[in-house]
Length: 302
Image 1 (cartoon, rainbow, N blue to C red):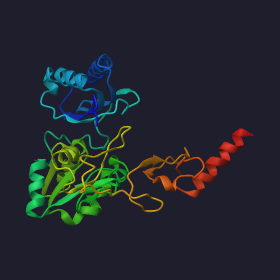
Image 2: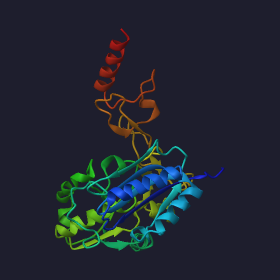
Image 3: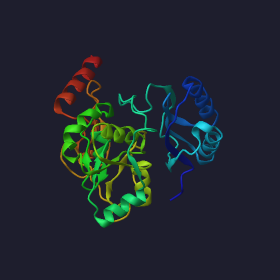
Image 4: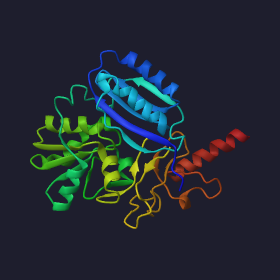
């Protein structure tokens, strides 16, 4: 198979930025010049980005970032792109680089101990007692997760306080927080420490790095990503690869995400091809959404 010429970069850094508005403008100009699209969030607490471009231009982007002292030493997670992973470029200034309502937590002061992918793999292999708490949203967890991990149960990360009752019994146990690229775990692990959890780790550089190093080992399924690819897998042709997602309607193995076509609902969920409307091919999460949608379409045609 011909290798793609496009690459997606996933990265973040918590660092104090005095003028995020200027950095926003600089980032927009740089990405436009390099013909890169994606999402970049800039805040006084740092930067968080997922962007796509040609391999050559993503390397130019990294080189530019390394010339600025605030952004040296960033760990870039790299994966194959498609050329259309993002419809446009969005660069925004926000209060936090991941919305968590935890602006008082500074990961450079309070955060979990870093655990590398190699160390986590060794913990699995040696059957060490530890508990993985997956800090991603419920719909992300649906297509892939670590063996025996505890889902956060969250639909939005800013509801992170709701995870506490689920894991309150583990305050004296070894906990490893995990997320896609690591940025959410910086705050999530600090939040657990703030709430008296005694031995908190975070997976350094996130699930994507672990999957790339150890495809189909201890992480089952595919990784949900926030771009048009929707899911990311490594060595998916390997017999050890397992589809863990389930169609919400019939329960069959599937990792195809859709949005309910009824715009007032727009639920994001996994749906197999057989459970879509037979005539239109559209997906509806429930019968009521389908009925209302087609009634509105018929009314407009009258």
